[in-house]
Amino acid sequence: MKASDQPYIFATEESEIFDNFTIDNTQIETYLEESNTTAFIVLHNDTLLYEGYFNGSNREAIQASLSVAKSFSSTLVGIAIDEGFISNLDEPVTAYIPELLERDQRFGNITLRHLIMMSSGIRFEREGTNPFSDDFITSHSPDLRRAVLNTDIVEDPGKRYHYNDYNPQLLGMVLERATGMSVSEYLETRLWKPMGAEGDGSWDLDSERSGFERMSVGINGRAVDFAKLGWLYLNGGKVGDRQVIPQAWVNQISRGTDAIFTNRGEHTNYYLNYWFLDVENRAYYAEGNFCQFIYVYPAADLVLVRHGFDCGGTYWTGLLGDIAVAIEAELNQ
Image 1 (spheres, rainbow, N blue to C red):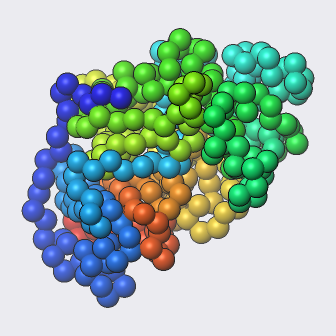
Image 2: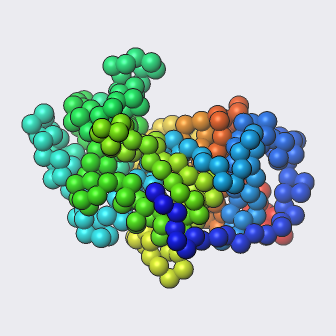
Image 3: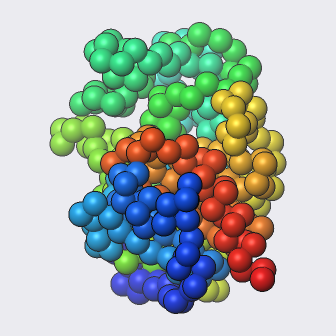
């Protein structure tokens, strides 16, 4: 995915907020270094209040999205609906992948909304290194289209939230067939370039032969360009006068309309279109394994981005909310 010909460059501000900012009584940069963080960004409106890189990383370094990719994937669905490639979320997945009916007629009851809300009723079991587990298959299969066409339904759709990496792969097939282009091409032309990406990005494939994007985990790019996705949602989906993400799609996320209960615990109680909702802080965020985050805090027009090798022993979901609230207090002084 090529960088934009007209990259959007955020303004920078030498903020005093972080001069004495501490986390657990540790100076912020020391904390970020010691918690295996590689990139940390604080964006206020369109101004970078903080941009730091650690543990051998730098501004041009490529960061892995892991499951943050799901929030990019869902955004593409919203754009495809706006462009008329997809009618609406209540269409059955079999309108685009009719061969699923040959496996089980009940696939006709699964809608795109069920897929994007993680409530499809499709089986997804996590068994670590078991090569027959669903988690292993979606992580390592060299032909994800074939793999996803061999899934099984275990319960009625819409019954409950169940995190499932087959769901975004099915949506990837829908996007391919609806738009007539690869998902990475659609991302490049509809989102990556229009949002003003500064650097080239990429999307991991299942294999060279199959050439299907790993929809749930595989986007790679600069941290500052990941921040642009959160910034777009904060900015009503616009870059200047250009509407990149449909306003209605952004509104649905920011208002938490029709979110589903997850029962995952504090700060992760609700889920909507591949975004988690932090109800306590009236925020929402994209989250990837090993604590990759795009955290959007509308109350103070903040976007926080964190990338790292792992979580570094930190509960980042709660910490990002605490940092956002602390910054808000400083901005209001």
